[in-house]
Amino acid sequence: MDDITVGPLDLAARVDEALAVQAVAFGLTPEEVGVRRHIVLRHLTSPGARALGATTAEGRLVGFVYGMPNDRSHWWSMVVEPYLRANGHDGWLDDSFVITELHVHPAFQNRRIGRTLITAITSTADEPRSILSAIDKDSPARALYRKLGYRDLARHVVFPSAASPYAVMGAQLPLLAPENGCAQGAQPS
Ligand SMILES: CC(C)(COP(=O)(O)OP(=O)(O)OC[C@H]1O[C@@H](n2cnc3c(N)ncnc32)[C@H](O)[C@@H]1OP(=O)(O)O)[C@@H](O)C(=O)NCCC(=O)NCCS
Image (cartoon, rainbow, N blue to C red; front, side):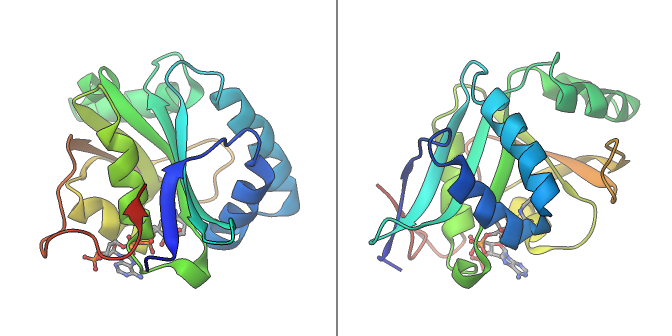
């Protein structure tokens, strides 16, 4: 596990590598990759947007995370706002760091790379809390987020063009540490 390094990622320069990881981890068609490419590059122009990557000793990108301080005028925030408001949680859209994407290549999953990526990026946030959305079903992502302290703020959230409903989750920062001490394996550089 000491063969993986987590550190700052120039996501604009390596967007195609990152989307190749996302395509195999999350399942994206070539058409969806093209759409995501534009969205990622636009996101990276947002104030405070940042990314971390997990790379092998050979420099292969095997995981990444990116996010930014939430902006209520962004599309994602506007879609989730009525669902959060209905539950009295819309205040979470202020002073919150949004995890926009987190993906680890399947050949490298279950090595605490995902945990290290999201913990490291949120540790750089000035905001006191973090929010994200995940497909509203039991999954490794939902299990990871719960372990880190994320709780459901809204469920059955429908994004236009998404096939499945999502859950919006929020956590106070810093995220919870692993129960058995320091993360083994992937180490933040
Ligand atoms: C979600 C994802 C990023 C997790 O990355 P990972 O590096 O495999 O996760 P980690 O090894 O850091 O796992 C951390 C915790 O998550 C949970 N977890 C991870 N994989 C799990 C699985 N298959 N089943 C149940 N829990 C799982 C575990 O509780 C684990 O805690 P532990 O280390 O104390 O056992 C990865 O599974 C992935 O890329 N999935 C596909 C894409 C995706 O769904 N991205 C999120 C979009 S919202």
